[in-house]
Length: 140
Image 1 (cartoon, rainbow, N blue to C red):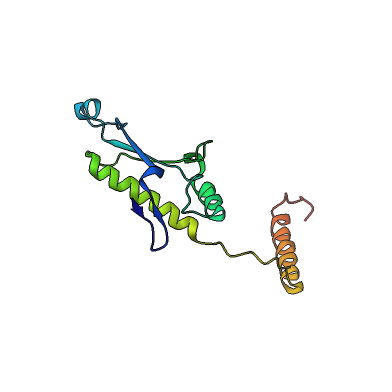
Image 2 (tube, one colour; image 1 turned 90 degrees about the horizontal axis):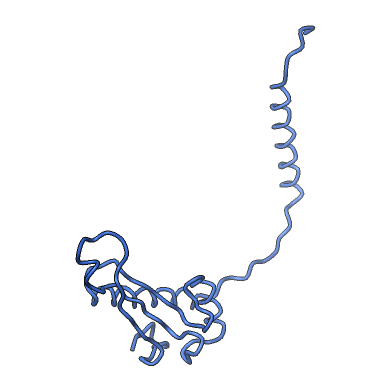
């Protein structure tokens, strides 16, 4: 069981983990020992998360979200299973906490008349500078 905050706890049936071999350099130990953790969280079936939180979590997860609605978190930073398991759980908690934050709605605004005028003046000033860089006639 993983406790995300005082209101949300993830039950054991929602989580499954498997150990795989780590990628990258590391000598003979990498080829023999399966220390990397692949933590699978059945997010779509989780009763602890509301549909809005699930939608935000899916957007945050990106490619880590499967078609079945599971979130897969991997950790292979350390050389031991317990440390990688702890890291994977921390990553999952961090993603869920990020999904709990409701983004502020954007209020549409229009540019002021003064800002439009400043923008056009800056454009014409810049155009004058660039026009001055042209070829010089021999008559002048």
